Length: 340
Image (tube, rainbow, N blue to C red; front, side, top):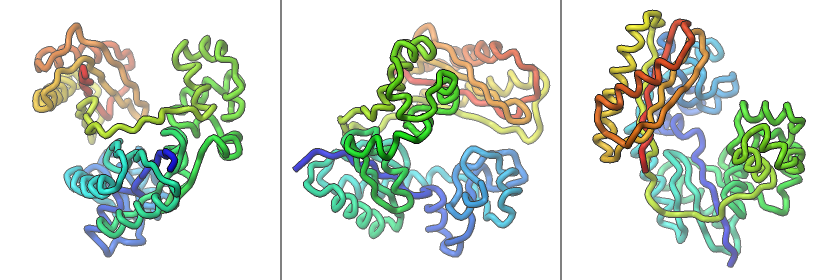
């Protein structure tokens, strides 16, 4: 019996839940986001595989999604329904002889001891499908990083194994952004240093990376390229790291007073969430999306953790003042990050 880490990722989760509620939509392009009105300003929360074939994916404006896929069915975002569906899936996973670490609505790590991880993965898929009617993909790895990346090769509804033995063959020629944890911004910085593939990054000089990306992030990127990662799966219940609220405006805000008023309103709503959570906030962030679609975030650490609405509102306005861009604003968001 060997120790394995399995990463379970539900396929097109939000769209799949909506299709279960509306079976007549099966096989059709489905887009979920906002109030479900593609003429309104909002972004795509998720899209079915049929919609993705038209270039529709999470994060793009609903209006753009409608232009790319005029025949798509647009539905409103319904978090309570996804909470309920996720709870059912996690209950199925916990019925197995495994340590289950929930990552969010649609994914979890499982720590298992088995002589046949593929059979274990197939059993998970069959149980999830039979008890929830949702399909999932499973990545098998010898650590969390490899298991997580393996799932990408397994989609949809498949199983893939990524370990030390096939790491270079599978990942070596892929771009650095294929690594879990490296985004476009970091990928660009690495490319400027001449590291465009995972194999090149794995051979990079840690000192060079540290000089460009910082003493922590730089060497960490090389560690990712080597395929190293944690092997610890913990069953501690998932706890939110922050609470946030945001609003997309149907007409751009141009007056500073209107923008500040909206940030104050969002901060007060976030404060209510913080109080309900029962944990003080240690940091406040403000997100601003300028027209046409440029998003920037600023944040500050509070003098001391607090749940006081006035303190959180004051901090949000102070962060807002750090933005120097005077372009019209189409979206505002306020996030409070918990102390622990």
